[in-house]
Structure formats: structure tokens, C-alpha cells
Image (cartoon, rainbow, N blue to C red; front, side, top):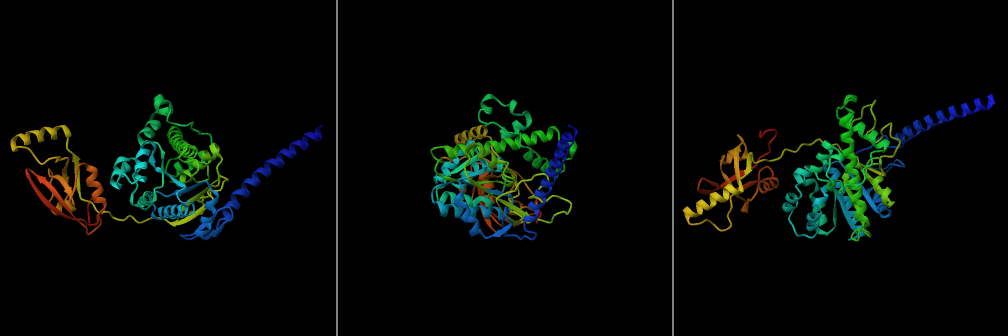
Length: 432
């Protein structure tokens, strides 16, 4: 009996040692399998460590119902890859595709439908979806993608929740939502061990030590899980809908929601078991010898993606042009009263004319200052396009580059006058 007990204990010890050895081997082999030398432009098939061409990658698209491209939001090359995959996806499948985008929020689906149908302009798309408030990254990175979608009438699926609801969940938890708000959410899974480890590493990497890994981390982790379950729910519902049941779906989404498969891909697969593949963008960087590789965390024994595209770390901060004014919308009610008084005194005004955007202040040495614009001026038009809201001014300036001019018609007091502004590159607070 004693010998049997000793044998049993010995087996347990050997099994334990074996488990530790397997973990070590998996971690080491995963990293060794990845090419020791990589350069911007390389595409790596992660499972084999083979460098391949885009054409070879494209051949694998045919076997997947869903293709995820994990982007780096502010990296230009990352978005060029997305457009390249989109064009290839369309060439292989024709009109039998749709595109899911993290950048757009579910309540804005009808606006995206209008974009696909060619019913609204780019300006209307950005204003109606509150691009700056809800997403905030440079639209120019996405312009080629969105133009291709519209030109080829490809359906776009809005994937995520609005920022207002996100903030409410972060502050009050899901239990703090109204019944109506809770009904808009799927079941939220916060039980994935490796997913939690990954996000703990992200939070610590942003300067949060162990002291901050309590309640603050739980709020952060909950929001991440909400995002990913909501986006997974949006994808699954679309693919099972009458509109999407026969289509292939290309998903553009932050790389952190795709890496290791446990974010959105795993949650979608659980619901429909459809074949998919993931393409991750990796920004090339100098690595610390003692640190983890960004793609191969030592405590996560999973493959980061099916394919990795290596891009340059985007260090360029291209100076943008700016007008150099603080503007505000005029109060509608007060403005209507003012218009009525003016109409009585002057016998009416031009039909349909409403003055809505005023300059509150002008930054010294800015393009506006050099052109002679002043606080109190009301902006009527820019390059003969009427200005009715603050966004009109913001959007118009974004289309300009250094050296461009803009003819602005203003109302100063009771006098209308043209002002020509010449834009130049600025750094910091309006300094050339």
C-alpha cells in the first residue's frame, strides 16, 4: 500500500514538472518560430513563421467568412493595409461582402446606409455620426476606405456603443443603467483569464502599478469586455440577418480587440462557429531585452494572429494648418429676435439668410490674425460655401494645406466684406 502511495505521489510530481516544461516550451517556441529579423512591409504567417507576399495572404481570404484586420488607429500604413485588403476582398467576392467598423456606433446605422447609397456627402457623414466626438482619429486615414465603400455600394455595419453609454457604464457599472439601456447590451463575459492578463499588461504599461489595479482596473476591464461583446453581437446579428446571411464580412477594428483571438473573434466564433482569420498590424520598434515581445506575452500561450503585417512606427506628426480662431454658434432664439428687429427696421433681409457662427477670439500671429479677422465677426461663407454651424468651419479648414488660401465672407457690424486667408503650417499653439 505504501509503495502504491509513493508511486501515485511520484506520478503527480512528474506530471507537474511536465506541465511546467510544456509551458516553457510553448512560450519559447512561439517566439523562436517568429522571424528573428523583420522589416517594414513584411507579412508573416505566424503559425509557421514564414514570410509571405500579399498575394499569398490574399489566397487565404477565400476560406474565411469573416476577416479581421487589427489596425493601429493613428498609423497611416495600417490603414493602407486595410484598403488593400478591402480591394482584394471585393475583387474576389464582388458585391457579396460587407464591412464592419469599430469607428461607427450602432445608433448611426441608418446614416451609414445613406452613405453606402450615395445619399449624403462626406461632410454630412462626419457631422451626423459625430466623428470627432465618437471616434476622434484623423478621418483622412479612413477616407480611401470610405470612398471605396460608397463607390462600390458596400454595406457598412456599425459595431460599437456610443461614448455616452460607455462613460455611464464606466461610472455606474451595468447595474447603473436603465432597463432600456441594459436591453441594448448582450451578455457580457468577463471570465477569460488570458484576456484579463493581456489587459492588465496594457494598464501597467501605461504607468499604472499594482496600487492602481483594483477598482480602476475593474472599470477599465468591464468597458473593454462591453466593447468586445457588443461588437461581437453586432457582427453575429448581421451575419444571421436576411441582409447579411450570404455575405462575407471584413472587419476593421483596433488591434487590441483582435490580438490572441480572445477579444472579438472568440466571442463571435462562440455564437456562430464560422471560419475566420485575423491580420494584425505590428509597428516595428526597438525592444527591451528584459521585456516581453509586444506580440508574444510570456504569460499568454496563444498565437497573436493568423498573419502579421509589419509597418513602420508612425513617428511623424505632420503639422496641420489652422485658422486660429475660437468660434461659437449664435443662440438661435436670440438671433431670431435680432432678425425680427432688423427686418422691422430695414424692411426685411435676404430670404433664407441666417447668421449662426461668430468669432469669439483670434489667436495672435495666426492665419486669421494675419488676414485681419476680428472677434465679433460673423462668418457667412467660406470659398462661396455658406456656413450654418461650427462644424462647417472645422470641416472646411481640414481640407486645406499649407499655402492654400480661403475666401471668407464675414459680417462686421452691418457691413459684409470678403477676407482672404492664407494657411501655413503651425506647431503647438499657433507658432510657425
